[in-house]
Length: 225
Image (cartoon, rainbow, N blue to C red; front, side, top):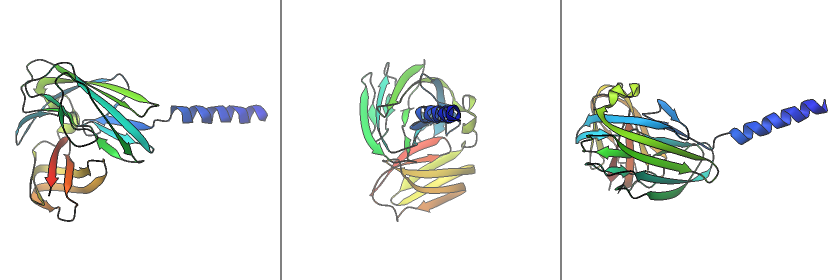
C-alpha cells in the first residue's frame, strides 16, 4: 500500500512539474506553439494594403509576470513591428525590444508581431522569446510573400472582414459571420461580439484608451478618446 501511495505522489508531482504556466497560439488559435517552433506567415489584403500578422496570443494559465524579447534578423521594407504587452508598437530594425508586464490567470495577451504595408520579396525572420522566469518559449516567424490563406486554414473564415473606428463607433463589413473581440492593452477582454454583414458597435461605455481588436485572424489597434 505504501508503494502505491508513493507512486501516486510521484505521478502527481510529475504532472505539476510539467503543467504549463502559459500557452502560445497563432493564426487565430489554429496552431499551438512550443519552444523552438518555426512558423510561416503570408499576407492578407486589408483596408490599408497588405499585412502580415501571425496573430500570436499568449494565454496565462496562472498569475505571472511575462517578459518578452522581440527581434528581427534584418529590416523589411515595411518593417517588422512588435506591439505586445503594452500596446505601443516598436519597429524592429535588427535591435531587440524587451518588455515585461504582470498578468492574471486567464488573460489573453496579443503579441502583434507583424509587418504592415510592406513588400516581402524574400523571407524575413523575426523571433519572440516569451518567459515567466521558469518557462521559456522561443518562436521564429518567417514572413513570406504569399497569401496567408494558403498557409493557415483559419484565415478563410475571416476573409472579407473590414474594421474601422470613428469616435466611439466601430464599423465593420463582414462577408461571413465572424467573432470580434476588443482587448485592453493589459490583455483583458473588453467587448466580444459575433458580427456579419455591414454594421457598427457602440463603444461609448468603454473607458478612454488603446484597444486591440481581433476579428477572425485579423488584428488592429484603435484609440478611444
